[in-house]
Image (cartoon, rainbow over all chains, first blue to last red; front, top):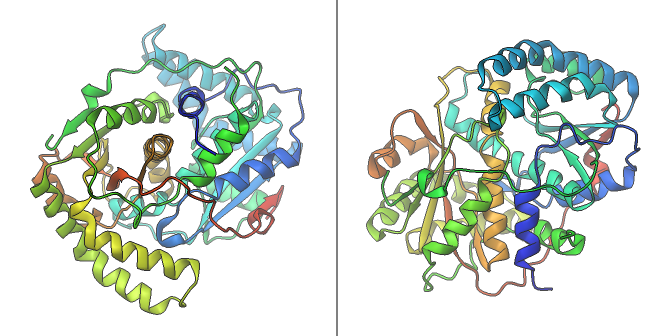
Length: 210
Length: 210
């Protein structure tokens, strides 16, 4: 099958961070999560390591506990960021939307925590950690794109990671497995998402030299 | 427009790491790179930071110099990894293919180096760096997906990053901007890529608890 470029472009340009338009009242079947994970693990990994693990949390008490952990850093950060950002800008809308998500996180029917095996030691050079994380975030994004194609939405959040250890205790995650995100997952309210406004790529592209 | 799930699934499951099937003799128009970058920057970033910069290298001498830098770590690593991997396994084919790419890297018509502004200090906690890199690898992967839809291929490599400083000098990249990958980009020889064989996702998915 030839890939229809217009469909691919639509997918890549309308998979937004969904926070306010998550349907909190509609259940998400396990089968849909499994289908999206099957697509996620088609993403490449360094040296074909495939060290990913996926924790899918449906249990209401655990989602409440994760939401509490999330809020601990998210609340002061997002409130301060919202106050400092200019009213009406894209970024101020992001912070306001992120506060909404924070308040409702426990109500989102599924939390997905992607993990990577082989926790790097603290003090690993920053560029080496790029090589490490390059083996998981493409898969995370593929998962989100697959959700979008099926009428679901999510948001790549990392604000619970300062309290990763407590989340690991809650979920029984071994020490050598590192959490890399928390994705709230739900059907979206409507599917008519538009591309985000972005500055021209010419401003951020350098040909042959900076 | 409704998203055609079968097209989306095909995109996500057949965008492979392309190394041997890059067409080294066909030029890549700038317009195609620009289109794919426009799609790449639709990806989400933490706090809407959009700190990405993209270096696109077409200059033959610079590609030669980048290939030399890449080879410095890639050659000993890949030769040793190839020797130690079992003949005929998927991973041994990856290493053999990676060695092929290494030998031909200077011939690949375009090198794209995605960068992120705001270099983290060394010693930043490992999980905090997850939050940092989560703002660039989704965009990198979107770029690769967009290439695929247009008949081009690439491969997310990070083996030059130990010599990032020399690459920065070569390309004039400022100190506070960190390189996160080197993507060789070319049209592919044919477009009939198949999904990779993967273990069942049930093996790597945990419901509610590890």
